[in-house]
Structure formats: structure tokens, C-alpha cells
Image (cartoon, rainbow, N blue to C red):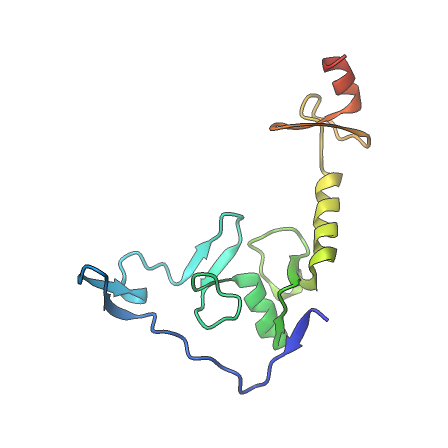
Amino acid sequence: MSYRILPDNESKNSPSTSGIYRDRSGRVVPRGENHPCWRGGKSTSIYGYTLVKKYDHHFAMNGYVFEHRLIWEQHHKASLLPWADCHHINGLKKDNRIENLQAMMHGQHSTLTNKRKFDRRECYCCCKPHLRWNKHISKYGTLCIRCENRLYP
């Protein structure tokens, strides 16, 4: 099983995200919604996923949670376990509609996404998709066998 059912009364107290606090030097610094750089509690990860500010979530990293995990958990009233992933069916990382999200084990998700990447590979020399690949991989991508034999006799 890749999730656990949450009881209706389970809740955690989150730290205060609004107001002001003093930093180490004693300066008064606005926090949360009062900060001039506040963008509504949403951010984008380096991988292109939407992050939401939620301190009390069990998968919060620096107070942020992946929005697609949060939406799936809220809709199914269940908590995804650490070895489970939330898969975007159409492959678009920003499309967090519930009908586009599917929970699966991490191994299944890796197999699915790696197969998808393998199917879309194309040779960086001739720019054609090929079924047979060699082991020559560079920073530009992969060479097909025909181009490798031509470039590296």
C-alpha cells in the first residue's frame, strides 16, 4: 500500500507564518505575508514542480510541499508514504488537476518515466529516433550505432 488513511480529527499546529520577528542582529524583519517578497506562498522547484508553503505537512522541506502531492492527499483524504510517488499522467509538471494525478510506488514510477524518456531519445548527430543505441553518451546526448560507426571508426 502506498498511502495511509488520515482520521478526520488529525491536525498539527503550524508555526506562525505571519507577523514580524527579530533576526540574530536584533533587526525587526517582516515574515510571511508581511514580507515585501511574499508571493502567496507558492514557489517553483528547480525541477519545474509547484511548491506550496505548508509548515505542518509531514513531507515539508523548509516549509514547502509539492503541490501535486498535497492535492492528491487532500482529494483522497490519505497520506502518501515516503516510498510512494504522485505521477502526472500527461507528463506536464504544472498540471495538478486530480484527474491527471496517480499514486504509485517509487519503483513503478521510475520504470514508467525512464521508459518514456528512452522512447523519446534521438541521436544528437542525425536527430532521428533509433531503436538501437550504443554506449557512447556525451553531454549532448546519445549517438545511434550508425552515427557512432561513421564518427568513431
